[in-house]
Image 1 (cartoon, rainbow over the protein chains, first blue to last red):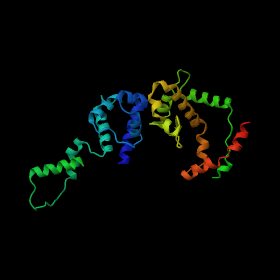
Image 2 (image 1 turned 90 degrees about the vertical axis):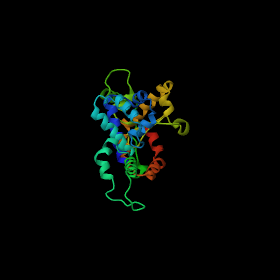
Image 3 (image 1 turned 135 degrees about the vertical axis):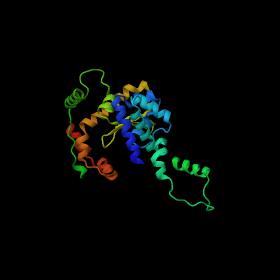
Image 4 (image 1 turned 120 degrees about the vertical axis):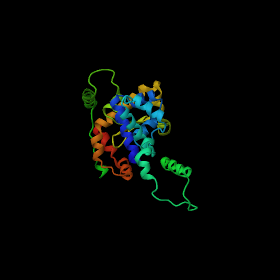
Length: 125
Length: 133
């Protein structure tokens, strides 16, 4: 987890420097607190969880035109937060994380509704 | 390390000016104004860490960390444009430590908090001061 925070922090700092923005300038454009931005860059605070904010940051950092780079930026942020990006979960990872076997309380086959609830829970965890 | 034996070489104003000029020319060139914040943040790529109530609670405008990778500043000073002149001076002061004292600080071999306290306790200020005269 700390490694993921550090990874996003380094990415954020590198993108900002490449864009030629000082901490002050980036925070002014993003309307974000400089102490917290600095903490994120140093890997001691999670990035924002709101995808809209992350997209805005991508725009400020000059990567919005590049969809792949933007998605990587958002994914790295989500991994740093400890949540796995939804589109990845909907593919391979979620399947891998689903239980191969499970035993129900009443030893009955779970309903579709119950399985859906379980998938949602795993996806969020 | 016996901190009592530490000797800090005295640097004259002329020598400090010479070092500052060399640094400025190398990192910024001759154009004015010299944006010290941009030098720290983008050229040297040090972290600038705005800390709330730093000045009020610790009486500190700015400090450079022992690993010389970050400069902490008072958040209020950082955000209040009326105080930017003072902030720029403080940042330039800290960069003075970066240029002039990085090597000597590393030679102290501080490995833990105990060493750090010992350095401040035993550093022979009485031997540094006469050298100045």
